[in-house]
Length: 111
Image (cartoon, rainbow, N blue to C red; front, side, top):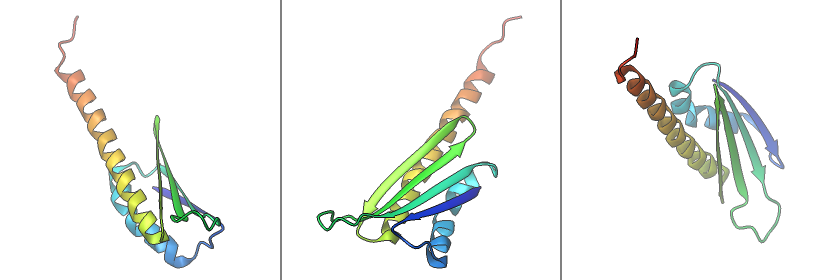
């Protein structure tokens, strides 16, 4: 899986890159190596916004696009929340595809 990272009002350093790679490794094992993951790290600069550290994740798979957006007070916590959300979506997507394939195989074919 290819990972593209962008930072809006946040410098994307080696620590953040390593954290993103580590947290999304579970997702990478479940998807194709041709899948593309876009991670956008955002810091909201409005003092009235309590959860100012935002992570937006977009995963482009064959035929489907999965998205997750999480906000919290720390960037690492936002990354954790977004990776958990995306892992849940990938698992659900894989189960749906597996059920469709099994249903297709089980149905009697007409000659």
